[in-house]
Image 1 (tube, one colour):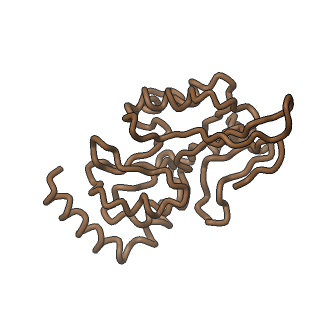
Image 2 (tube, rainbow, N blue to C red):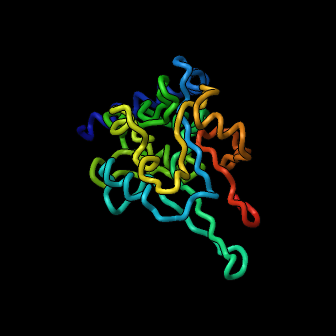
Length: 223
C-alpha cells in the first residue's frame, strides 16, 4: 500500500470514527453466528516448555524479533523440593469489548462477527499504532516486514481456515490449552469453565476477554 493511500485511509477513518465509534463497538459486541471462540490456559498443567510459542512462530511465520505469544515464568513458590513456578500466557485476549477496535481510525482492527476473534485487516492498517497504545494487555506490535499491526489471531488465517485447532493448542504436550466455542454449553471449553475455577486478566477494565485461565494452585495468583 502506498503512503498516500495510507494517509487518505487514516484521514477518512478519523472522520468516520468520530461519529460512529460507540455504535460500532456496540454492534461488534453482538454475535450473529452464535459462535464466540475462546481459549483456556490451564496454569496447573503448563510446564513452560514453550512448544506453543515455537508452533505459533512456525505456522504463522512470525519473525524472530517479535512474538504473538509468550509464556512468562514467575516464582519459584515454596521451598525445594516442593518449589513450583507459575507460567502465564501473554497473548491477545480477543476481548468482546476490545479497546483496540474502538480506537482504530481506519477500521483495520475489528471483531470478526462469525467467530468473535479480534483481528486486523492488513490492507487497511496505516501503522498509526493507536491500537498498540490502547491495548491494556500490551500484546500488539508492528510487524517488521509488513509494517502493520499484528498479534495472535487464534491461527484464524492458517489452521482455523483448514478446520484445525490453533497451532499452540495442538503443540501443547500437557493439554494445558483448550479451544472452542464459548456459546456451546456442550463444548469442551464451556464444560471446563463451568466445572473449574477460572479467571480472566484485568477483569475490572470491562473488556470481557475470551482468554480464560485455570489459576496456578501454589500460593497467590498475582495479576
